[in-house]
Length: 104
Image (cartoon, rainbow, N blue to C red; front, side, top):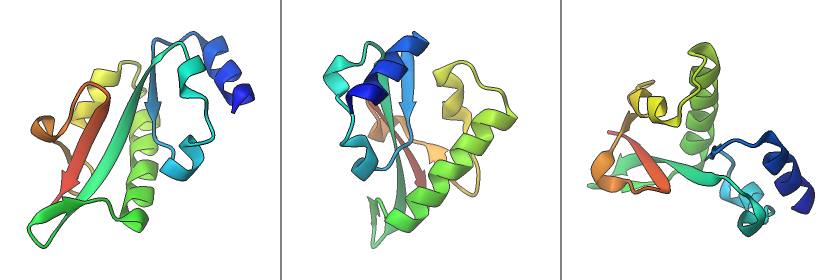
C-alpha cells in the first residue's frame, strides 16, 4: 500500500480517478495520498433499485478506461459525459467524492 501511495504522490496530480475494485483499493493507504480521490460507481437497475453488480461494474470500469484513453481526457469533469453502453452520470446519486453512473 505504501509503495502505491508513494508512486501516486510522485505523479503530483491534483485528482485521482479510482476505477479499482474495492478489493484492490483496500490495499492503498488513502490518508497518505496528497490528491483528491474520486471513486466511480457503476450501478444497474434491478427490481426498482440501483445496485452494483460485480461483473457489470468490472466491464464498465474497462469501458471507462478505454473512453478516457480514446478521448485523451485530462480533466476529471469530462468523465461526466461518459455515455457508453447505456451508462450515464447521475448527479443526484453522486457527491464530491463518489460519482455514480447508472444503466437502466
